[in-house]
Length: 99
Image (cartoon, helix red, strand yellow):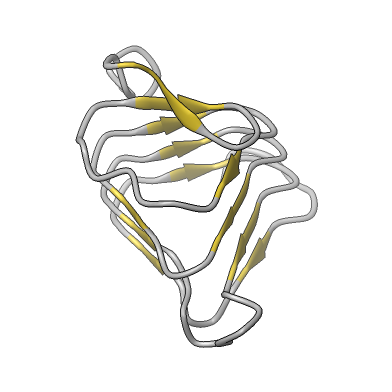
C-alpha cells in the first residue's frame, strides 16, 4: 500500500501477490451476495479512488486507473483499465508502473 488513507477491502476479496493499492480504493462484495467479491490477480496496480466490486476477476499485470469503477471481468492480462464504467484503454498494463 503506497499511501496512508482510507482503503476498504471486503473480507471475501482475494488479492494476488505484488499488488499496489493506492488511497481511497474500495474493493467490495456484491450487495446481493455479500460473499461474492472480486478476485484480483498478481502484479495489479489500483489507482487512487478506484472502486472494484462484485463477483468479478481482474487478470494479472493489469493497471486500474484513478477513480475507475470496475464491475465486470477483465480477463486479458497486461491491460490498462479506466473510466466509469471501466473499459480497456490499452494493452500496456503495469509494464511502466511496477518495477
